[in-house]
Image 1 (cartoon, rainbow, N blue to C red):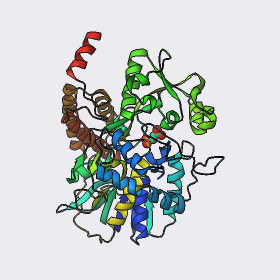
Image 2: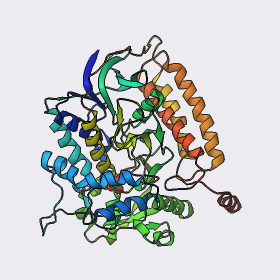
Image 3: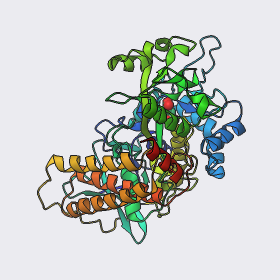
Image 4: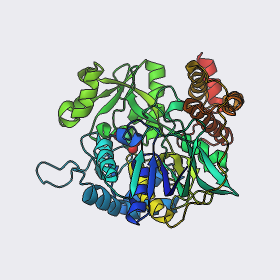
Length: 501
Ligand code: SIN
């Protein structure tokens, strides 16, 4: 049994920021991550960059709201915009010394642009911004006397007592080890493992969302799963940052024609949900879509050396266009939190992708995820201090039955992904969403039956994925309105598709 003032679950930018803020206040912080290397977080994979407010904070706010199809929570966006530049400067520049790219002539920051941004305001390091932020962040925390980081350590379940959260059960012992915390901060990232193709690292199983929901916390906006329009279309998808379009590359269909101007006045720089659906439509009707990088001002390999290296790794000849397809990228919803990251459960916070702050509404603007994680992480960490851990009765996690064969989780995951891909992807049919709910409910029931007597990590990940998938399917089936990432196919479209067949 351990005790800590603050327990942070997850080591992406949001978890690191929460740990930093709490440690700066003098709190003892235990950070746990199930990854074997703490940098195996989505933040490390972030490419395009981190947005600042640029020359026009009001313009940034309006861009976020417009990209969200006017669904973002204005008060939450105000919090982000107001705190953006000071957080970037304080933590990333002054504390961690991140060396964002500079313009070779002016020696000022070389701001880039991405889709749906009205100006160049995004700080970046090549197109590998995430790793240049996260790795120094982890080194800094490693050296901080108030912070301990435990790798390869999964949180299995929250410890609750009379509606209050008192820490979590970790998988460091066979039947779980309780860590009692004054406050618990979930920063567990996204849901990429729920889909066959995702830009997230493996292990993105919605853990924080599921643990919070099972403990009784509210979740919101779960239907808004964002697909990135330009992931490499081959077997191992990797992201081709929106910055490539921001700097002037074009999308072409199987006939070699540019198509985005027919879909939106902002063409390649339209909001992400619009571009993702257009890319999929063109793949369906013309066979493929490619990213034409010959239109960039600089040669691709000079403008984006790290993406060029990735293409080389995958034998992609960018001169003839890079084949792209939409790919699951980010969950805009999650555990419902306030402007300090507080959930609806006492002493539980959630930050980063697992949280729903309201900033993204139905569709997130590019390069606001690292920023949201940073701003909310700092605010949550500051707010969470000052509560002493109170040991209570820990849940009894039984481990009396033999382990299940490894293929058990693999097979169930396969079924879950098939349902998510078919019924809860870019376009959703009300009848199919209802069917998905039925299948996912049954799947969750099967997993629950096993989890009662076993504590294997892969089983808990499967349980978390099935709970999160069910929450997504419920929210999707309960929202008849097409908005942002949640596109509901109309009866007319269905009739037209049947006629085409
Ligand atoms: C990208 O570089 O295109 C991803 C940026 C983001 O998801 O915000």
